[in-house]
Length: 261
Ligand SMILES: [Mg+2]
Image (tube, rainbow, N blue to C red; front, side, top):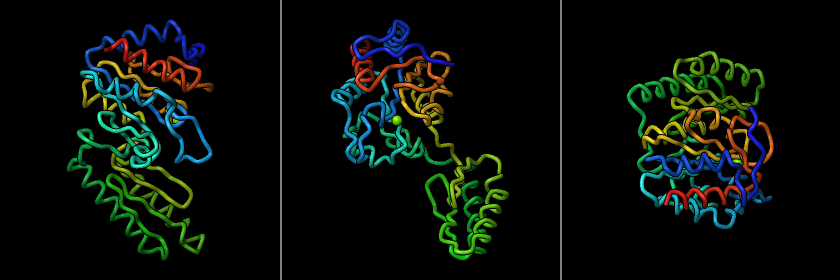
């Protein structure tokens, strides 16, 4: 699926314009925005990726409107996202691709998830106990087996294989396998799951999601028919709309704030 031609910062496409008008009139609205490459230009030093002029002001203006929830949804950890963006309440900051939440959106694990995480952790610790140098890192919703410090490559491989065949194969877990590391989560962390959670907790009839990168496709993929996906820049996308660049995103947010005010 290909989004229509990119609109410029002054001039959204007629389709996008219609979509924004529809979003502005919906009783309860969620606006979720990626950060890097969507609101802030890429720079060599990621700690200096400041927002484009007007970006945070537009988000805060929207977030201050009734029944309007605005979230920044980033792969950065939440603390780094807060620092670099300068954004804070009423804008909701969601870090680490949707695994770090705050405020009223931070819901604790339920009994099943707690039990599953205990099982995963125990299984991984058993693997680690047989593998000198391996260790298990605990996160709020996941356990992570690290085998990088294991000196024997065969032992490293065996430990990874045991983790994949054991706890990673359980029902209801979400597995991210990297080089010498496997993370097993009991709650899905993705931009798609994060948008669904925002929609569920607010009851929003319409969600707007804006992003520029491959990871944002997991967000666009989960949007409902009535939701509005906006891809920033070139590249294949599942989003229904496209804008050319970051200034166009700021223009879009300002327009949406004007229409909804
Ligand atoms: Mg991005």
